[in-house]
Image (tube, rainbow, N blue to C red):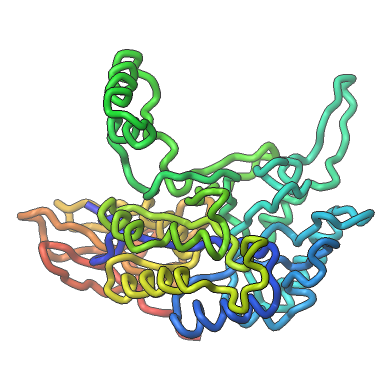
Length: 390
């Protein structure tokens, strides 16, 4: 059996923070606390440019190039083109954004739609993924906001699906009754719904709890879409303290699941804008609790791309206990072929059944690759891949 997460971790957390409303002084406070003091291995999201007239001081790569020192794996579309007055958006803006990313050595693999941007892929608009439209008279029109080909070209392979789930713990199977009970306020109502589900043989109520799934777009391109956990009202620096509270994290560990938290770390409620410090004490305490559980190896913490890359590779492993063979296969979407750099530093753990051979033969796309085998407790072993020099 392939363990869900590297031994001994029991859960996985990442934070997908949209950069909306972030002022430079608040960005600096967040950077000092999360990345420098706590040293959490998260990556951030950025606006490449910002043309938002309502937020002229909003942090973005073009006007604040020094933010490139921080790890980034996500772009919040091609930039903030909301409330830009007469300035529209077209492919030339995407090309300019790609050049800025290249100059600063940023290689994003994650795309998150922004507000009501017309070039979105899922959230409020699908024009960014639609090459052309046809009217009722049969006339075809090129969609000027279409950039999915450029999104793929820049390296994006993971796209937010535009929704928020309040179910704690993705990447896990949920029993039919448990799934119904989670969203029903009374036990008797849950029992009725469950019985009806069994009688009707309807779709399993836990369907859709995957952390990521393949998605084929109208132009034929396929990427992975992923879920974010949280609530719309808690998506700021004050609300996140609820989402990563000690109780929530401990429950997630017990569920043996994952979550990509939806938030805006640079945003605070309007009534809190005059507070001298951006990060409230309760949020600081919650982040420290996250760091403590990571240090104790109870839950893994990583960038969004780090989590999804791991899951994609994990889900394309074949383990044959009786033969003592572990085979890694490229998935064909994120990885056309697995290279040493793709596996470097990653750990994959397995439960060895009794009476199965203790020696393990490891192959990657059918060929041998340098690796280490670590024996854990309880018949668990871990395969690790060394870092690639240079």
